[in-house]
Image (cartoon, rainbow, N blue to C red; front, top):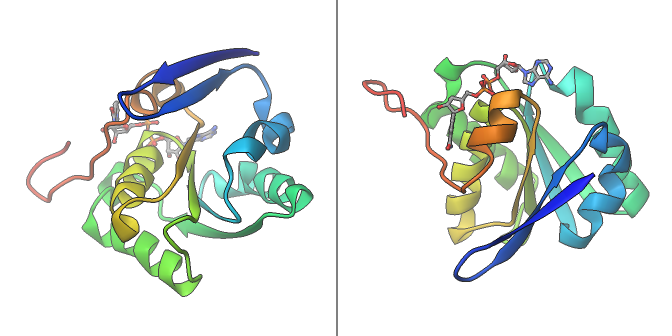
Amino acid sequence: MHTLSVQTPSHQYPIFIGQNLFAQADELLQPYLTKKTAIITNETIAPLYLKSFQTALDKLGIAHFSIILPDGEEHKNWQTLNLIFDGLMQNRAERKTTLIALGGGVIGDMVGFAAATYQRGAPFIQVPTTLLSQVDSSVGGKTAINHPWVKT
Ligand SMILES: NC(=O)c1ccc[n+]([C@@H]2O[C@H](COP(=O)([O-])OP(=O)(O)OC[C@H]3O[C@@H](n4cnc5c(N)ncnc54)[C@H](O)[C@@H]3O)[C@@H](O)[C@H]2O)c1
């Protein structure tokens, strides 16, 4: 496994690169998790990887809940963003609840945008599951959703 350290003007965060890192999710995530965690993913990815994340958080004794969104670029919009906020509020997420984006670039963009705005900013971890999201959209901290007239 390779670890890169990214230094921003105010923060520092790691990027872990390697094969089958899901198997080490508990030990890799532990230093960065708060008391409560929201795993946000979509209906395609949930059957593949959600259980292993839930098991890792159970192992660490971290309270968690999951929000499963519809799959597709056409859902990268305000309506789906509001589903994230609905799920966070229904589960009494606080400002210190960590949001994990488990998925490709669409999930990463939406969850990043939600984390930047929920209660003025919540901790955020990206678990990119497509090549594009691993090498591009999860890096650099830019996130956005689409407007009905424009794709961002
Ligand atoms: N923020 C940025 O800097 C940035 C940069 C580049 C792209 N993007 C955005 O990223 C999005 C495209 O990302 P993408 O190509 O990852 O598309 P995506 O997130 O739509 O994923 C593509 C498909 O693969 C599925 N999938 C994801 N992981 C999987 C896995 N491991 N196994 C099986 N299926 C899986 C998804 O459910 C989806 O159906 C666009 O919305 C684009 O605007 C953002």
